[in-house]
Structures are given as C-alpha cells and as structure tokens.
Image (cartoon, rainbow, N blue to C red; front, side):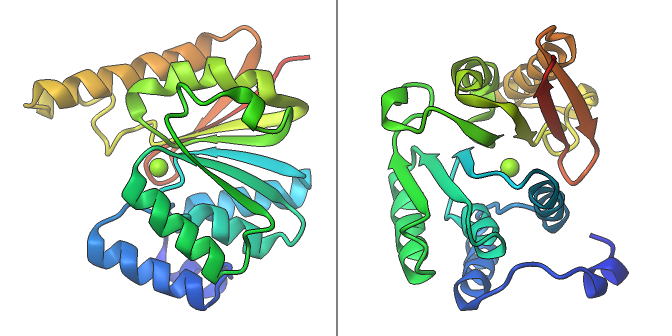
Length: 209
Ligand code: MG
C-alpha cells in the first residue's frame, strides 16, 4: 500500500495479529496484502455478511483480521497443509476466536460439503491456484443469493499476461491455469465478475439476476 495511505488507514490489530505479521515475515509465509484486506473490510461494511467461507487458511491471518474487525461474522476456513493448519488453530485459539472461526483440515477440492454451512455471503478463493475453476464450481452452490465470490492472486506475481519471462514448465502450467480461470470468470454467463489490480490481482463475482 502507498506509504502515506498506510498512515491514514486503520487495520484491525491485536497482539496475535502483530505476532502473525512477524511470523509471516520471518518465515516467508504469504498473508493477505493490506490493501486486499481493506477491500474486504469495505465490502463487509457494505454487505454486513453473516457467514464467510475461506479456501486456504494459511496461518489464519485473514480470518482472524476479519473476525477481529467484525464482531458478528462467522468464518469457516479450509487448509490442506497440516503444518499451516496447526499454526492457524493455535492462532485462532490465542485470539480467542474459536467460537467464530471454524477450521477444517483437508483438500477443499474433496471436503464433504455437508460439513460446511449451507450458505455463505462471502466465499474467498485463495487456495491451490491450479484448482480455482474446480473450487468455484464446487462452492458456488453454497453462495447466498446476494453473496459474492472473491478470488485472489489472479495476476500470479505479474506472470499472468507476461508469460515470456517464465522459464520453468511447472510455473508456466500454473500461470496458464490462472489465465484459464480468469477467462472462465469473464465468460461465465451466470456471474458478473469485476477484476481489480489490487496487489496480486483480485476479482469479485456476483450471481446475475
Ligand atoms: Mg493469496
């Protein structure tokens, strides 16, 4: 975020949030960018969502920040990496948010939907980048009528739309998956999607009436 705006914007904070920021920095764990978080907070102000589903908990930074900001929201979050999952469980407990943040260990591409709530107002897709189309098709069934799906990292560190600079085949494959997801969103007849160049690129999709 712009350094000057950083001094003006208030982000949710607590002892646990500060610790998580430090941990993420020291251990190179990606956490949600400040500007993306602000985008979320603004959306929460406008939408007053009751329930949110997050695919890709990591250490729980995003879920904890949002639940700290909004004292009513309930968040379900799925993480498939066991180490990250344990860290997140610990952080949620330390933040005393275990009554409002529910963590699931497992692959979001396979998790039984019955374990989750039947309806979410916000679904945040931030898991394995190769699975985005899969996630979208799987979880849109759980989106409330006025709900939105937010997808993160759609520019994939600037590689999307700039494939010339990619040398590794695996990376190229991943970037092509993200590109395919972006086109999928743009062409999806049931959803209206808007793309924003915030941080690594996000999109917000809303069901067409
Ligand atoms: Mg992300």
